Length: 82
Image (cartoon, rainbow, N blue to C red; front, side, top):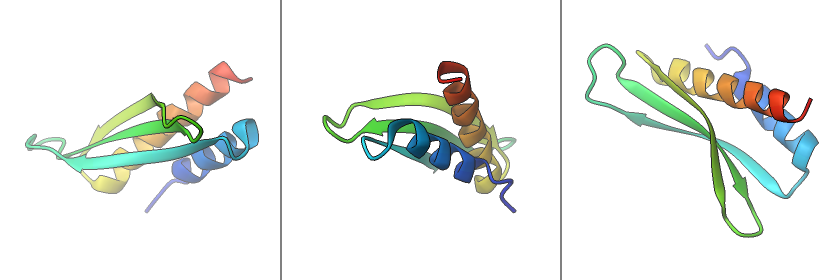
């Protein structure tokens, strides 16, 4: 079950940047037995396709890794745009 971090990350990105930047969380499976999933929160500038990586997470489940990365991305946005 998601903790809502992805929603917060997406909504905060939209509030700050409007339609000029898109928030995304990319998830992939790893070979690590303990933390089999990794994720990365990214901000993509739609005008020129530049990507800023703003958070990472690793966990035993895909959703937990995604939530961790989104939470880091949300916290980064809050620290840069108070």
